[in-house]
Length: 296
Image 1: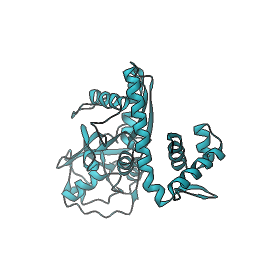
Image 2: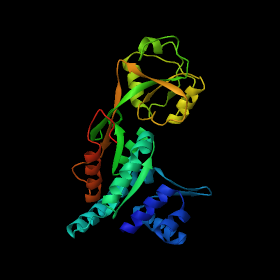
Image 3: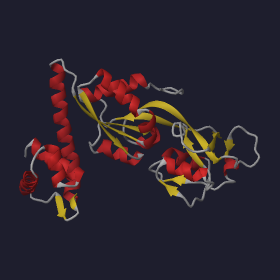
């Protein structure tokens, strides 16, 4: 099998359509279909299921895709090494981010990096902590921003301490004059919570402080959570980075005991990065080296 066959399989699997894969790769749909059929014939099993709604990976295809990603990433790394030996800084870097980093940091990262390295292109994937971890482990992304607690077995370089805040509807606090919210006071309120894949650090804070909460609202994104809080459906815990320039009328208080999530940059094999990936990794470290203060 050729690298083009691998690229056809990867693109078709990620896009879910032969026609769209053909447009991206500059081939005809019949050429895409033929390449996949030849691949399956050589492998001895089916990697994609065809239906009226599109295509999807078979169990065999799901198992094979990470290895195909690894092969294509290795070829990209080789091309970048050759370019670097010829005095060129070029290549492609795929970076994964969660929402608050995407909003607050990524535009500046993209702008400052491409100003220095215009020949290096970047592809961005936004998702939850679980999405970012999956993309890094399966070769979809070269680098990714995660909280240290959500990285688990993925190597991560800490960058920034992001304090947790208690977010409340405006004027809803019950007469306390304290400049912070402690555990006992939090117990008095209904909570709006997110799924653990979205806010693992907040879930850890709740468990560590034996704060057992009951919530009727289980949402995924930060803005939806704060919107529900603004309308009086409860309180929530949010990292400070999320609450910058938030378009809702709410009040924020530091939590006690103090807690934070630590944001870092993660890579599956930091010691074996392609030159373009290493260049972006070092750029991020230089710009956002670990600090308690605002890294911008």
